[in-house]
Image 1 (cartoon, rainbow, N blue to C red):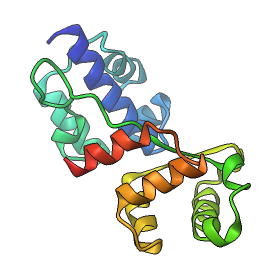
Image 2: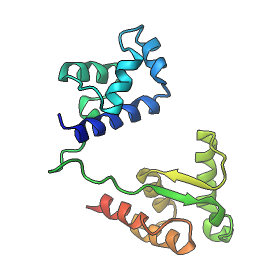
Image 3: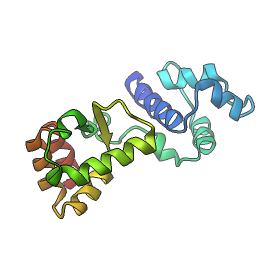
Length: 166
């Protein structure tokens, strides 16, 4: 296993673990010692090779399909992930409510659900953008252009939408 592949695999393992709100020691505790924190950490850093059997067992422990743990299969390594969709909440506050009201309410709901009140930026998923497009009665690409025009989304968001359309 190449070291780059091992690091990408490790990043996937870490992402799944943190999505589940587990620390490395939390994994050890939840697995009743089956998974040692130091071993899982070494898999995540790409310092230690994981066998297919152990990867399948770890996927089962996390309750995810094995393919969710594997890096992308594009030639020469994983494909570049689409850019994140990050709303600039400070700029959103300056957009007239008659235009941005639905987006402001949607963002406030996400902040409430996440307990994320930094007030500066908010990451949203592709699904959130599609939902907002329905609310605004526009295609995701048209809404993206509108949000870029308001200064609420960075121009890189175009790549995320283009990636979604591909």
